Image 1 (cartoon, rainbow, N blue to C red):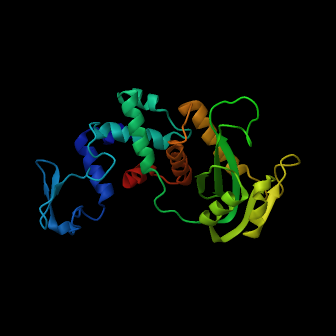
Image 2 (spheres, one colour):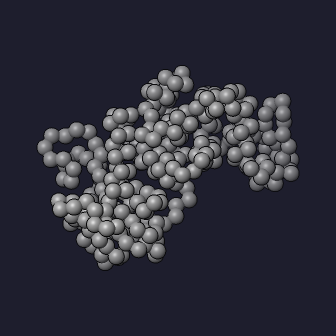
Image 3 (cartoon, helix red, strand yellow):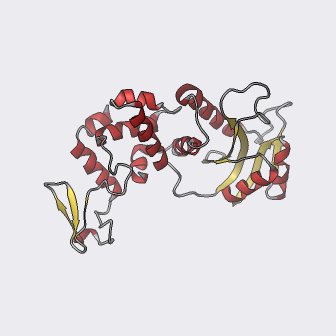
Length: 276
């Protein structure tokens, strides 16, 4: 209700977007002139650079560019995606803001694209590493070795952030390469299960494995954190998305990672606007 009341008009939305995007004043988005060399055309809600003469709105270069959807609806959709712990379907977004499913689907994916991590910081401390398999229902073997599934590897910093990687095959080489890209020199310990492909990690970092056939916790050695993340992903797929393709899976993972990594932030709505 706060979002609806605060941003009830297009003018309110544009004003807030400009404030979030240009907190230190509006520069020229074309030539980079300082804010003091940019004037505002109030009658048209535009800005004009006094250096190069370029006229532009606060929407130029954003995910809202050339969109026929009012910003009031965009803002509600962003809020719904930010605040839905297990995500929300395009159908539900469409019904809520009053647009077609096709429009809502495109809108949701633009928002997810804006949620991609633009300032990645390598992980440190105690890390939990595990993989899951995403795909439709299949007959026969489940989990590791199942045909038609998409392997997704997750690395979670204990009490911190998570990163995902979609790989073609779960091999020692692929897992080690992902770890080299994600982990910093400040890693204290990597924790995995007993899967054979994780054996080589010990060559790179201190490594402990937990055998789930005997126990799930051994002191600090457990993978509960990353398994909780997989639970959120699977609940999202089963309860909201129902089906995800390999082409768009990175966007769904970006949404999950953004919400999870910023779970302690008070205003992730504005954070999405900043990245949008």
